[in-house]
Amino acid sequence: MRTVLFITSLFVLFSCAKQRMINRLEGRWNYSKMLKNNGEYVYHSEVYEFTGGDKDNDAGFPFVIYGQDTIQGVYRITKKNVIKVTEGSETEIDWLVEDIDNNSLVFRVAEGVVFLDKQQ
Image (tube, rainbow, N blue to C red; front, side):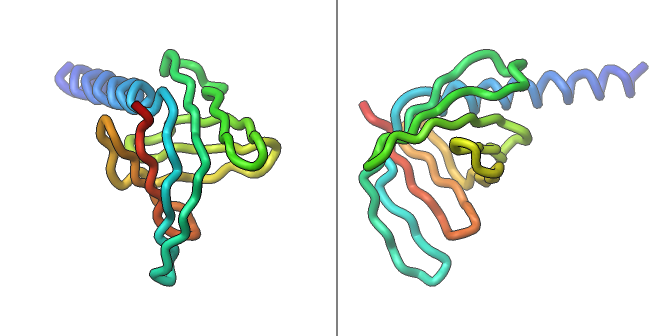
């Protein structure tokens, strides 16, 4: 009985963590810079717009990248700190969230570390 209760409570906590991440991501973010793996900074002027919703949506949630081109994609929260992103028809990319608060999001991709700042 204790085991069932323990497993149920872990599931509830994990589900709450996914919903908190979705709620924090919702809105518009300025993609300000990327620290590449070779130590070089690359500056960007794109805007990422994430749409939120109910965590039980297995298909994912839409997001749009506004830059020179407008790119539409889908994101899903799979683990506590992993966001799976599909831009257009490309393959799925894992974003490993290093830090997130109300005003900033820092995540790691294969090329380096990306810094996003929340628009007010």
